[in-house]
Length: 225
Image (cartoon, rainbow, N blue to C red; front, side, top):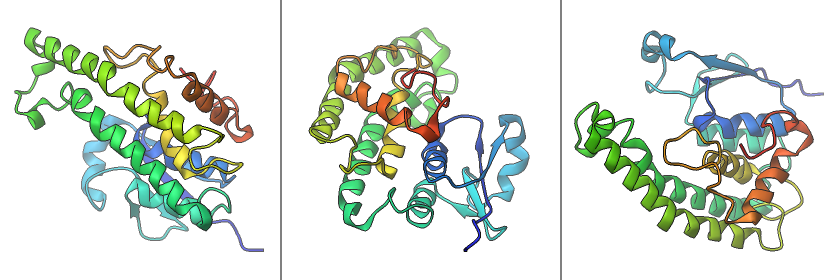
């Protein structure tokens, strides 16, 4: 019997881009060390990482691995027969691409409050009256015009299917999608109502179905918030 690999996944104590990898490991029943880094410790740790960013992963104490999507695909193909099956690769990658498009569309409205310098605004812009007004307008406009479009695309992919790539069990596409979608219903981002997904009940049911997987019991409360 081939011994299980010794895996250590290091990221901040948030869901973020590492959550899809964590979910794939949990769903594949693969033991791993979930190493959570405090933001106060990151400054000292950053120069020791290959590219100055997290997550990083070690497997059997080998060289550090980087890039969350590479990690996710490795877990899907190496630790499971159902998370990244060859006959579903196109459907999986298409669904992941759709979620990446959603993220790219949302990111400016989200990030201008955190990194205004990247958008031609001064540091601290989000704390000014002008900044608060613009951030509110950007986010509300996105939720009115863009989110419903993407939720409709997702519902179309779920038509007749339990999972984004079809099949009888979740794939890495669902590991990517669910944290992104849940982020819009957790009530922790300004001007993002916890009811943001309620207009598309098939999406809400899909998230609940994923979070009800036996391996994920107790991970996400009721699955939505």
